[in-house]
Length: 131
Image (cartoon, rainbow, N blue to C red; front, side):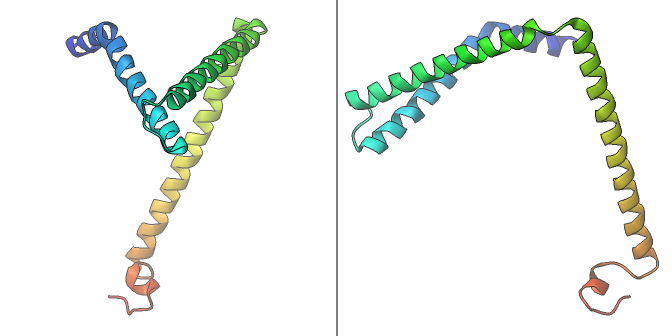
């Protein structure tokens, strides 16, 4: 029972960096093509490589800013506030799920009752005579 979970976890731990390299290679390729098409030159042109380098720097700077924003947000967070927020979100999600289930049940029972008495269905809505 646990073998697939352990195997998947081990595979991820041992191979996630390989997947990361493949994804990053694809991202660089797509970015280089974007710059090459914009400039009307080949992918290996220095203008394209400079554009990719600038995009990489912008991406890195934005991730650094994101990290700083996360750190600022976490400084004012206490475990009690986190639990209250999670409990409130859980209750809200539960209420939404209950409302969605009730609406689906009502729609289902309304559709089945209208087809049972012959007033619903595709033929009566299209103006064609019913059964």
